[in-house]
Length: 313
Image (cartoon, one colour):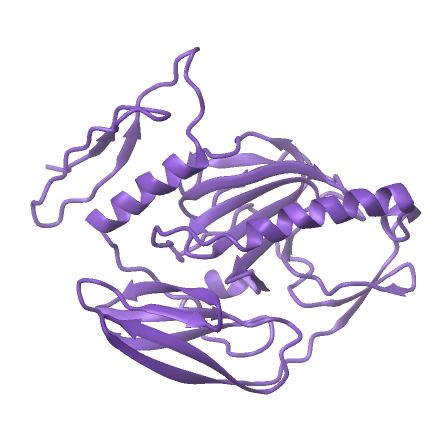
C-alpha cells in the first residue's frame, strides 16, 4: 500500500509527520487546505522542512550532463556514498553533492568567462580532506544581434541605472543562497514549446555589446503556463527592469532556477512548489523582442546551461 508523508501544520507550527519504513514506500508531502487566516510559510521554515524530508529519504537522481566547459557543469564522481554524504567546496563556495546509483557526485558550475585550464575543488568526508582537479575545455558561443524598440532597455537613464543597481543586489543575494536540503536535478522543461535562443550567445543589442545570454529561451505565446521543473521553494518574485516579472526557485544546495518576462505570477515568496506546479504565465515584460520564457539555472552562484539538466546521460 503506498505511504504518505503528511504535513498538517503551517507557519511556525509543528508539523506532525509519519514515516513508513516498508520497502519500496514512496513519501509524498501533503499540505492541508489553506484557511483564510493562515500566514504563508516562511522561507526558513520551508527550507527546514525540505531538509528534514531529505534526511528521511534521499532518492537517486538523474545527473546533469558532464560538460566541463565555460557555462557548463562538471559532474565529479566522489566515489561510493556513505550514510552521510561528503561535502565539497571550490574556495569559499560550497558545492551541491547529489547521490546517484550508490555514488556521490559534486556538481560544479563553471563561469562563462573561465579560461581553459584546471579548477580545484576540496572534498571533506568525516576527518578526511582531499582535493580534486577538474580540466576545463574550450567552448565558443555564437553571436546574436537583436533590435530592441524600447531604447531605455538598451541605454538606461540615471533613474533606471539606480533601479538596476538595487535589483542587482537582490538577485546577487538570491544566487548566493545555499540551502541544506538535497536538490532534485532531474529537470523537466518548464514550458511546452520549441527552444529558441540558446545559452551563452554573445549578444549585441541595437549595435551595442551586452552581457551574454545567461539562460535558455522557450518560444511560447503570452499566457502559456510556466511550471516548476523540479521541487523547490520560491526564493523571490518581483518585477525587474531587464527581467520583467520573475520567479526564482531554490532547489537546494546552491541550485537556483529563474523564470523571466512573465505576464503573471501565481506563487509567493517562501512557498514550497512541486515539480509540474504552475508558477505563472509566459509574457513579454522587461527587455524583450516578443513573448517568450527566459529560463535560467544558477549553480554555485554561476549561470549554467539549463539544457544540461534536461538531456540525461
